[in-house]
Amino acid sequence: MTMLWGSSDKMTALYIAATGHVLGVATHAGTTDAAVEPSILAGARLPLRASGGPVVLGIPATHLASALVDHDPRVLVEPRAYTLQDDALTQSAGTLTAALDGAKLVVTLPNRIVADTPKLVHIESSVLPAPIDENGVIKATLAGNLLNPTPTEFEVELGTVAAGDYWVFVAVSGYRLYFGKLHRDPVEEPPVP
Image (cartoon, rainbow, N blue to C red):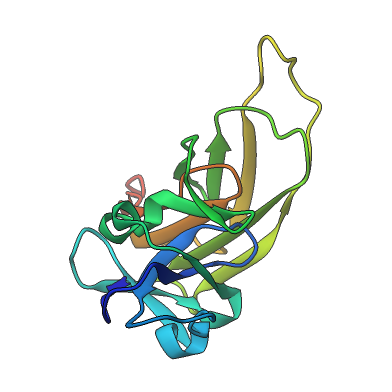
């Protein structure tokens, strides 16, 4: 989401409050000393699109915050590549992966978590009775060592193994945002003899 209202040396960053991941920005006309409120920019849910396609899921506004930041044209082009840390926008680093495994979503971080780390997971699918919305903390792990770190995994229960498309949004502090579609094929039952 990028909203262009005019030119100013400031803009409003709309971000995940728990993790700092930027989901969109709005520029300002003239001078301002306050960010635009999240509810004004997003309403009840911020709709997200995948690669310019149709809206595939909506992040509840209760997870959003906004901040007035310095205008940066790079952020206008790809806001989801940035996080807000100490009132400054920085590019996200570290890539995580997500996969369906039985009735769970398994998220893997490339290294161990040495401090409790905020996360937000939001999943929508036509095969789920309601969106899954999990906001919390990944607990620190002592597995592995500094020279050979062990990846950190966490799971989110889906409550189903139904076939279909699952739109998955994962934000973990310190890592690039994951947003994509995971597909599960129908499981073929063996023929009854």
